[in-house]
Image (cartoon, rainbow, N blue to C red; front, side, top):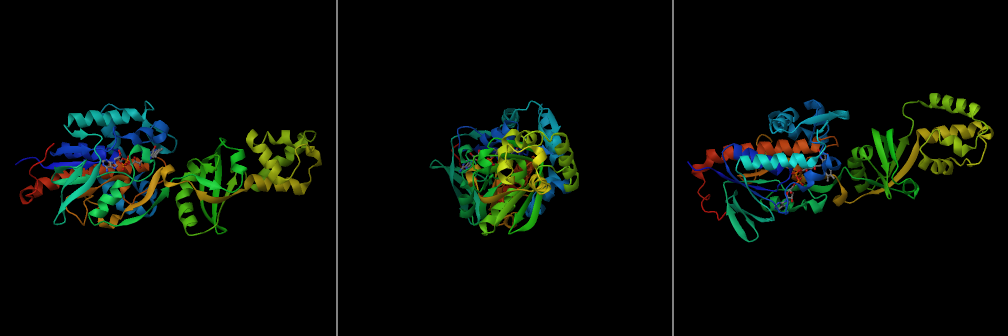
Length: 429
Ligand SMILES: Cc1cc2nc3c(=O)[nH]c(=O)nc-3n(C[C@H](O)[C@H](O)[C@H](O)COP(=O)(O)OP(=O)(O)OC[C@H]3O[C@@H](n4cnc5c(N)ncnc54)[C@H](O)[C@@H]3O)c2cc1C
């Protein structure tokens, strides 16, 4: 019996993994990549270091996917972070685990992750055609039988669609897969940015642009009601706020903004001290440093860029001697340190989001195989699906796990169905 032919569309994290798996499972595999290079987004992940997975246990891991988590259970059961680590180490790539269970290549180079895939795909004899955007799926009687790229038809037994989301379009993820999947009858959960920086009112953030705050806590209020909290690192930017804490809160913020709700961020600059302890510390410092002007006193409490902002917002003049500051003013300072507020006016566009929320409705995909329930022989993997997670390596693991499952199942199912498939005949590759 001849080998089944599989076409993988998209050479990102999901597509590279899917192609290698399909080939290892006996398929004649062709990977069509739109860009001149494969894995461009993979190359910029984790600020060029590639946070490829996380060591969290499976239930915790799934919790990072929110409502989209249960769909991922079967893909993770078959290929999880430990399997991924084993895969890379077998290919000679050493890994390291950092704070928060985040796993990186020990070399600190995302390019090394890509090299592993290139070497592996070569060993498995996957044919890669770059600069080959797929424009159309060929579908016959609710079954995919090929694709068209640059006017040329390629026939096959199964197609794995792994074209990614629609963020960072310069990397090739321009949302083509949404149109292709819709042409096969799939529906789309509205696409929107996730893990995206937020814009804030006025020029407060702008005045501190570039300042990075570590170990702070942010509470998000939606329509004045206290909602999610996050702890960690925040960065002020020209337009508002970014950094891991903000990215974590951003998914909920984007949805709330979309529904016209008001959002306020309350930043606790001293989360290790409760109000009473902080008050005592300020009081003690006031007593020992009474002869200093307020502005120099603040330097012991805050980074330099925050000092003018604090003086502005607490209304205490910079030249005032600390000894002249009243108890009411001191309490005002304490409150500001525990509850520095920024009003959110918007979010940055989808093009600047780390991940695309929404995508192909997972109810239309079999989670045991990643095959479409609507179009036979069509498999969908990666960020194109309506799956999205927090930062920490979860999104790449999702792309690798769904790609792995799609590749393996597409190969084995195509082999099983081969006699009944009469369309897999000529291809001009
Ligand atoms: C700046 C940044 C940093 C990130 N850092 C991390 C991190 O450290 N850890 C983490 O877990 N996640 C991270 N992510 C998210 C992660 O990169 C994505 O979730 C993941 O790459 C999705 O993989 P994918 O294969 O589904 O899609 P992609 O990686 O987007 O790959 C899709 C591929 O399909 C190709 N393609 C598109 N249309 C067509 C077409 N019509 N024909 C042929 N090919 C096509 C594209 O050119 C692209 O190569 C980061 C994202 C960004 C933007």
